[in-house]
Image (tube, rainbow, N blue to C red):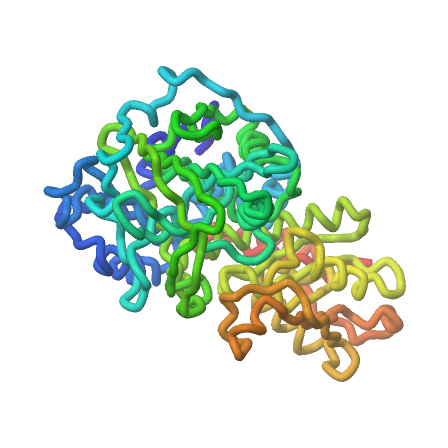
Length: 499
């Protein structure tokens, strides 16, 4: 299924998802406090599970905006992730990663449109007319510190030094009728913007889009250069400028076709206790602490707006796991190519490993002594892969990095732990890593570099692996359905007659 034009907004994306048969509309009222999340968690247990559109909550009667809620937006559906990346939904996983690598290397600046061309400005509330507590903003997990919005959307801040706009994905906890927190991990762009502005005793303008084309969530969760706006990478993936409109309460550019946008500011040193929150690790985050507090000045929304919600959970129910794994893999692969590292056959950050954060596998053709070790060291620290990663594994090019069974086979037969494992210490980590205690040590992590490639010294004397002849594979493949065998012929990367 291919389209002549890119996705324009969340509603167009939903129409295409419905055409794929991956949208379930729930018309019965459901409680946004824990029930919506529970349904999403259970539905998400099945690979490729559909996205869920809740048309009503049991708080709808008191909701002045008439909000609908979308959960399991991308989930573990490779087809929805491909559609979001403007690719054919039937593309293979390896090809999707390769295409994502190419697409995220492109940049197209956004296009500012007039306010009467921006659907998100259809309705506006300001001042005392704003009451976020009247909205059905959900509570995800029983021990969460409050109700959370913005878990899958776009937060816009401006670098106080060079003026570039960052579009990130940060959770926002409801604090009052016109107040929300921002939780920001160390080193993230918005945190750096706020810290630098506060040193000058300046307020920080902030906008957040709740309900956007899911590509914003995909791109907003990645690490890009800190002097280029994510708006440009969004346009690069689409091959078309993203329409933006200037805010009315701030001078920020916000997505013109968003469902809901809030605008506000963070005064110097304005903080309030935030958390905990059930996170992508499948654990609650740290017990909470003081986080920047946004004072909301305006809220804009379309008629019958859709609030998008990203459930953080253990795999495969975690919203971010599969799409983040694909994009992280693409970013690492692209970073290695920029550094001139040859012979990379594929990269994959496995989604079951803390949503792709914790394990990355690099498949490469060894071309010189130390090649595998070089690949491991670089992959561990390039911008696309440095944050939180714990296990970096190198395998030969005859191993498919996206196939965990092949990776474990290589780990078991080509890695000698005594010789092939190195450790990096005091690396960039996260407050959310539950394996490190006491909690105050968590921003500093460690990484294991595991060489599961054939020993380069013995490439030509190593025991030969069992493999099919290419001629036999082609012959069997041509008769697959004639023989009554179901599905597609599994791909094979290594043949007995390969040199």
